[in-house]
Each structure stands twice: as structure tokens, then as C-alpha cells.
Image 1 (cartoon, one colour):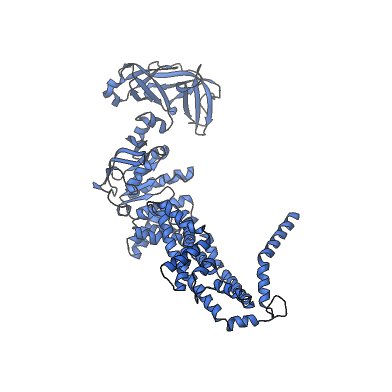
Image 2 (tube, rainbow over the protein chains, first blue to last red):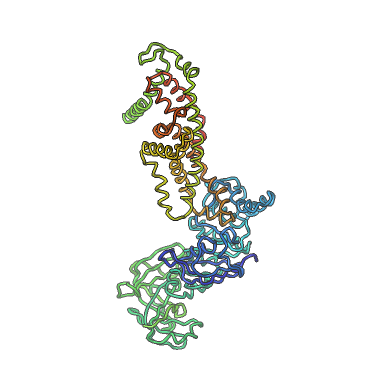
Amino acid sequence: MNGSDVKIEGIDKHFGDFHALRNVNIHIQGGEFFSLLGPSGCGKTTLLRILAGFESPAAGLVRINGRNILPLPPNKRHTNMIFQNYALFPHLTVFENVAFPLRLKKLGRREIDAKVEEYLALTKLAGQEYKKPAQLSGGQKQRVAIARALVNGPEVLLLDEPLSALDAKLRQHMLIELDTIHDKTGITFIYVTHDQQEALSVSDHIAVMNEGRIVQVGNPTEIYESPADVFVANFIGEANLFHGTIASVEGEMVSVEVKNMGILKVTMEPGDLEGMRDFQPGKQASITVRPEKINIALEKPPDLLQDVFNAFPCVVDEVIYNGFQSKFFVKLSGTGGNGNSAIKAFKQHMSYYSAGPEINWKDRVWVWWKADDAYLVEVHDA
Amino acid sequence: MKKSRFSKLVFFLTLVFLFMPLFVLAVYAFNESKNMLWTGFSLVWFERLFTGSRNIWRAFWNSILIALTSAATATVLGSLGAIGINWYNFKLKKYVQTVSLLPLVLPEIIIGVSMLIFFVGIDLHLGLLRIYIAHTTFNLPFVLLVVISRLDEFDFSIIEAARDLGAREHQTLLRIIIPMAMPGIISAFLIAVTMSLEDFVITSFVSGPGSSTLPVHIYSMIRTGVSPVVNALSVVLLGGTICLVFLMRPFFKYIAHE
């Protein structure tokens, strides 16, 4: 493992009146693929620029392998950055772009040639050595940027939304390649993105940021299945959110009274049992249900158990066909479809022939989900 | 059809309007007589130019010397200034930028008068040195403007990338910023040479006896009566300029493409 341990301790940063980062603490293990995920303006890029040395924080420390790097200028840090717009040197060839950090180190000609060729091969750029950046496609420019950042053998690679300028297909492809390069080199990757799909698909751990704060740190499954709050639930993937009042708690089953819907049953996570005191009747609760966990059919299935399933009669408001899945936007029968009463349900097309009759716009349908598949995301006082 | 005939006509008229005066000037360089009556073809004024006009040639070489030196100085100072203004943050940056471009809009005569008063004030009498300083000064804002607009095309993250990859401040300057700005620097230099060669107003204020440049010298020749030697000189300059433009065409292309 070449990857270095990164500890971010109590980082604070202001831009004038704007509080960009508020007491940020993260511990990134050596060799991890770590993502900083958040909407634009959440401070993730600022944090990355602090790691690279382009910004200095008002307070806090950054330790790489235990050593505080904040006093060092960018050129003295063993971090390298991949910029959003690649930042290739337009007057140099691909070869010279990649050789740039080696020439600064005054390495011998043979050594430079060998290293550049090695990293051009790693990034599948062999044969492009003598082109100028202007002659390359977006994906190729990206590869040059990667080769150039890696050739110096950094301890930590910083990636600032590296794929945002590429089209969707290429983005997928480059993401897999980045993951492969990460596996081959073993360097710690810190990846900034606003795209939750990117973050979920390659990261070992993700820190979700909002308004300068770390909201949640966890592995992709934790972030998706057990969001720390309503913001994370909404930001990562799609979610149905229901707000209501806790009516009763029986064992690990919580009943929440939701306006227009009646009682929603939700099972607590094993971890929540310790914090039982929070789940008192009368408290406000927010529940999320992922759309793909909701079933939808024209008729009510007869064998639903009242205490482990939630089932509601609805009217289809909108159907969006996506090829591999259909998205149904339904509203509860007899309501206007506002707030709690609008529900999203996604149905995967698992086989060529769809099971059961087709569901269309304006159809009366039933939606239902298991209490296990709902998640109590926030509980607070009324 | 009609439309294209009309645009051809406009094109032709434009050419006539632009080049007719030059054409008349060139034709009268080959006139035998001294005034505007055509008396016959002759090369006598060219002979006079090349054999009996030492002052013209001295002024010509003065012009070349001052153009090259002042343009070079202005290019070096202006390019560094442009890099500083564009890529470094310092107090009063906005004001420096505005003030440095002010001479572009100031009437030349004001610059000329102020230069003269300044040189008299500091008791500087060397004519050529005065002209060199004056030309460097008025060329600076042009260089700044051209180089800044070149630098504006590049993203600041390129500089950050260089620093990130291990370059120190001066290495970033020498290996990245200056090579990237080079096409802009070269065109700034060419513009500065041209501006210096053709300047009359400012030069006429600061030049002393025996240190005039070509435009000032020609003007003083005409004051004592029009001589067809000036026409002959114009033809030579015209020919020289045209040759230069054709020789440098591949070079211009390079600048435009970069």
C-alpha cells in the first residue's frame, strides 16, 4: 500500500461573510477511495483545495501520515490534484505534460522516458505522445491529467469533479478506469463530486457535506440505506418522505400517524434500539421509503399482513418509462397529491414480458411496502 | 446576381478609396519635374534619395534603432506587468490596471507636452534617449492590453496545476506562463515596433536637433517645400513594408492559430 492516512481535524474556513467550512473532521484510511459528496457550494471543493494547498483554513489541521501539511506550499506537498477542466499545459505535448513534474525534479532522460511511458500505458495513452492537448478528446485530456498527477508518485490523489465535463457514457467508462487505476496504484483517492451515482459506485467511504458541515460519513450502503437526516435521504438517490407523529412503539415496530395517510408502520434498525428514549409517542418523525422498495399493482394483493405492510389505494399521476424501469408518480385516492400524499414507486423490468397487466396514466392502483423497508430518518420533539 | 455585383462594386470602391492616394504618391515619385505636372518618367529622385540625402538615412536608422529598443523594453516590462496584473492578487490591483491603461485614451499631444516638460525638468538633453524613453512609455499600455487579453484565455487552474506538480514560483513563470503567453508577447512586440516607427506627435515634442526620427524628419523636409525625394522614399518604404508583410505571413498565421 502506497496510500497515506489523511486526518482532517477541525477545519474552519471563511470567505468574507460566507462560512465555507465549519469544524470539519474526517479520518481517511490509507489507500481508500474516499468521496466528498454534496451539492454545489457545500464546501467540498474548498476542502480539497485546502488539502492541495491552494487555500489556507482559519483553524484546524491536516495530517498526512501524522504530519501536519498545512505550513507547506502546494509544490512541497505529496498530494497531486486532478482539476475539473484538466488544466493541461496547452503549449506542451502529451509527453511533455506528463514529463513536467519529472523535469522539475531534474531526473535523467532515460528515467523520465521510462516513467512517462509507464504512466501513459497505465492510462491507455500510448501513441498519443506528440499530440498537443487541443488535439485530444475530452476523455483523452482526462487521461493525460491522470497520468500527469500520478507520475510523481503522490501519497494522496485529489480529484475535483474530474468527470463532470464528459458525456454520460464516457463518464461511466472513466469511472471504472479510475477505480482500476486506484486498485493498481493503491494510492489514497479523495474524490469530490456532486453526483451521488459516481460516489456510490466507486467509493470505499463517502462524506456527505451540506452548508460547510459533514452530515454523514459512511460506506455507500450506509449512506443510501441509513441516511443520517432528511437532507441526506433526499440528496442520495430518490426518496419518499413522510412526516408525522409517533403514535405507539411496540418492540421494534414504530407506528407513525401521518396526515392524509393514517398509520405508517416502520421497523427500527437494531442500532436504534439503544436510543429507544427518542422514540416516544408524541414526537415528530420523518420516514423515508426508497421508490424501488415500493410495490405497485392494479389490485390489492390479498395476503398483506396489516402489521408488517403499509398499503394505500392511489391514482397514477404520471408514468415515465426508462427502458430498464418505469417510474410511477401516484397520489393517494381522494387527495390533491400534495406533501405526504404524493408517492414515487419504481418498478424494474426484470423480464421481457411484464408480469400482470400494464399500469397506465389515471389507473387506480395499490402501492404497498414492508415496514422493514421504511426507515426512520429523523425523530425530534414536537 | 445583382447582389453580388453590388458587393463587388463596394469592394472595388473601397480599394480605390484606400489605395488611390498611395498610388498617386507612387506615380509622382517617377515624375521628372519637381511639381505636380507630369513631364516624363525619371529616376532622378531615387538617385537623389540614395546619394544626396544623408540626413534622411540617419533619421531612418534612428527610427529603426528606437523602434527595436523601445519595443523590446516595453514588451519585457509590459509582459511582466500583464502577468502580474492577471495572475497575482495585490492591494489596489484594480486601480493599477485602470491607471496603466489610461495612456491609451489620453490625447497624444498631452503625453508629448508632459514628456517634454518632464525631460526639461530633469535636465535630460540626449535626444535619442528622450525618444527611446517616450516610446517605451507610450508602448507599455499596448503591450499590457495585448498580453492581458492573451492570458485571459487561460484558466488560472493551469498555474495551480504547475504549482501542484512541484513547480516553484519562478519555474511556473519560466516554464508555463511565459511560453503560454508567447504568441501574445510576439504580437505585442510587433505592434510596439509599428507604433514606434510611425509615431510623430510625441516624438516631435521630445526630439532635439540631430536626433529626429523618420516621420519627424519628413515633416521638417515638407515644411521647406515639397520635394519628390519624399515620394521616392515613400515608394521605397512601401516596397519594403509589402515585402516584410509577405515574408512574415507564415508567422502571422502562427500567431492567429495559437
